[in-house]
Image (cartoon, rainbow, N blue to C red; front, side, top):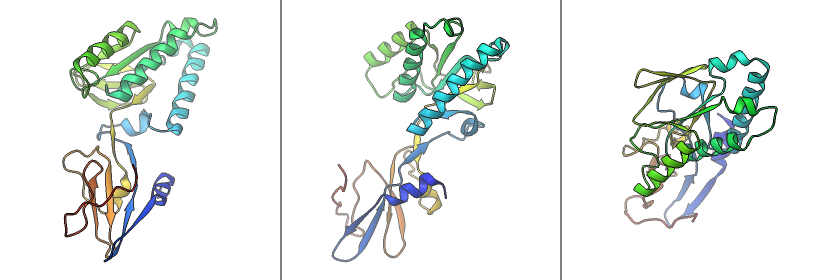
Length: 237
């Protein structure tokens, strides 16, 4: 069992009722790589402090390598691909553009001018759950910052040195940042819980009774007492 799963299992709350003891396991969530070949091994998710530290180290290493070996630039060493045009991907792409524009040290200024940030989004617009004004604003600001938008485009494969897109094109890159969403922790599947049929990426709550019967419910729906349909009070607000 992974360390992250062990930590999740420590987040156990007891609900004591007149008839029985129930356990609610707050297992959390993890990056959803959507079964895309190579995405889990060749990309950098950004949903935790550890993820951020790994990504920071990777970006610094790429610029250092490109400075020592300029031929790596032609191989995509300074191309950064962000997957997912939701809140995470849009914010990361914007932060990277700001970082590149703010870097004016003589050591890296030449390299910064050769760097490119791509944002690949499956749908026709960024920040889909938000207003039309937010869609337009995000697109304009990112493009003004030099971010190259790839809308209505899927990532089909992620390789150590390039990304294959649904339009048949490829982007040479040694840094793919994954911001395409989350799914319930694998703790749920390891316990034999059924998946959330409506949306596998939603946070799920795992319910385990004294008789070891395990079920899942979306965190957006109330937890009901078994056999009664009466919602239990939320433990954490």
